Image (cartoon, rainbow, N blue to C red; front, side, top):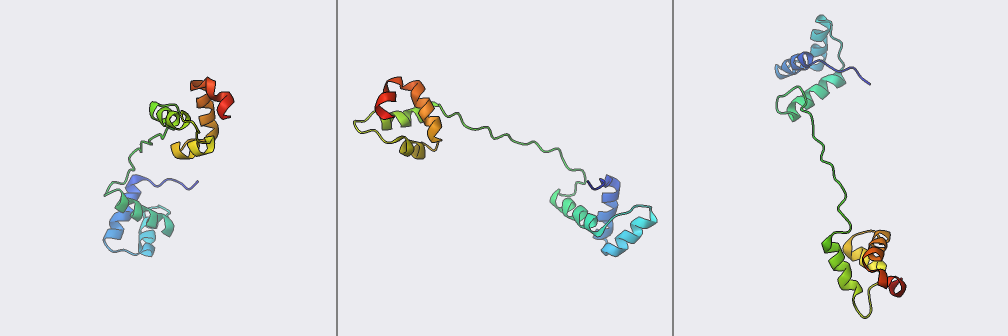
Length: 122
């Protein structure tokens, strides 16, 4: 893993780039202050600064957890019930495609909510 660059160094590098220094000149200036830095690191600092609207320290990101939706909610049960409670019920593959759930998941939920259908539909 590459070494982390201190916020002071990031600010120094960005200020030099804003003043119009080239990458080679920035590297030379950093060597004078006993800081070793590569051209790639300089370009990353400049990109980060422009993306973070002037903040050198990246804010802690909150990751939103995308939990799967409950499969046995009332809307899904209602949709499945409309398709099953007919004279000629739809196939379980068709029901799974329409309700956008897995076929096996729907089979399991149908066994729980409609135990009397098990012999007729499957």
